Amino acid sequence: MTLDYLIVGAGPAGLQLAALLEAEGKRDYLVLEQADIPGAFFATFPRHRQLISINKPHTGSDDPELNLRLDWNSLLSDDPALRFTSYTERYFPDADVMVRYLADFAAKTGVRVRYNSRVTSVRKVDGVFEVRAGEVFRARRLIVATGVSRPYRPDIAGLELAEQYAEMSVDPRDYLDQKVLIIGKGNSAFETADSLMETTTLIHVAGPSSVRLAWRTHYVGHLRAVNNNFLDTYQLKSANAILDGTVTRIARDDTGFTVTFSFSRADEVVKELRYDRVLACTGFAFDASIFDDTCRPDLAIRDRFPAQTPEWESVNVPGLFFAGTISQERDFRRSTSGFIHGFRYCVRALHRILERRYGDAPWPAEKVDATPELIADAVVARINRTSALWQQFGFLGDVVTVAGSEARYHDEVPVEYFARTGLRTADHDYTDAFVVTLEYGPEHDQVDPFDVTVNRVAQNAVGQAHDAAYLHPVVRHHRAGQVLATHHLAENLENRWDRPDVHVAPLAAFLDRCLSRVER
Image (cartoon, rainbow, N blue to C red; front, side, top):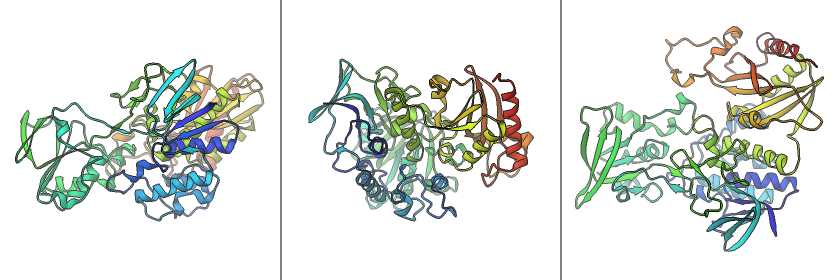
């Protein structure tokens, strides 16, 4: 039997795609999972067990779509019982809760998963993928949703002497009165440093890149405040330090480690430092070792992710798609595809892309009369509820296409996919389109949100909306592959963009100007 779709990995992305295929009931599919449970990654990681994905059950709203803006852990489902917020009230939940949630999601959605099925090889023969996991499975399309499962190892002589994040002890008493070097400046490094501060004599956190704070960059993969207590101990001279530069060599003797460090911001160009322990918290990368030469995907971003098209398809292997955290190659450090609250929408978009390409199904759309007022009303209604555009800022957009007197409103379209492929159908050969996104200002990460001396654009200031640094709606008019005009809706403290004089009327006027140039 040759399956329509074979999914590798029963983590959040694999389960999300399987649930969409199962609910539709049109395609033969199967999920292969090497562990005996879904979401096995979360049984081990993060090592100190606290998730940094927020969970807020108490929002003051009973709108499930709006509430997903503050729920970063739920997968998409119409079943209210499958909201992660019903599992715990902790703002930063324990990872064990995620393990239980994913098991319930798999059971309640009835997805077809083959557990204890570790994929050992993949090849492509006559356009069909042959995947060996004990037995051989055949599929026309292969979707890899394995996450980043291989430790990323920077080029450091002697790195093999360091304890890896995946294997190190997480008991602070094991580090009693020791000097510890942590290599890495991401959340895993600072999560580890925070855990060890009480028992170590000193901790150095080292790496060549600058520490970037998520509250400033709006990229949730940068250092989160929940993990940055260590910064206080450094800046307030409490024995610990952050070292900016490159670890070039690690050597071990009978009494500990000598680490050669090349500083990037200090007078000493190179210095040797002594430690009792060296921990490598350098992140993870995609493991492409299962693919043979017939279908080995090209890699990108220091070989950490598979290189992908706007459809999340391999750039060099047709029919090979990617879902979940590895899909972040498309918006690396610009939006949220590396995290559940972002990629759950990408997976839904991928499902629609697959159905459009292989099932001849149009992108779901609602018909709207093509008047400026009615299109403006539809846009305003959506931007005040949508969780997808909120979470996937600048990456997913709603698209309103106009053909004569009829417009069609399409939800959650990848912006680059629309630019490349469009949304035309046999009965809707549109001439113009409006792409609606939520975006931060172009230099939002250069603005210190806590510096009261920095001028901010006044909320609801219509004429200054394009200068806003905070998240706000942007509407772009497309025609013949070109962006002809752009309209920014004024930012608002409560994220309500529905004031008639400030938001609705200026948007309708913009649409009217654009549509008046169209011969209909």
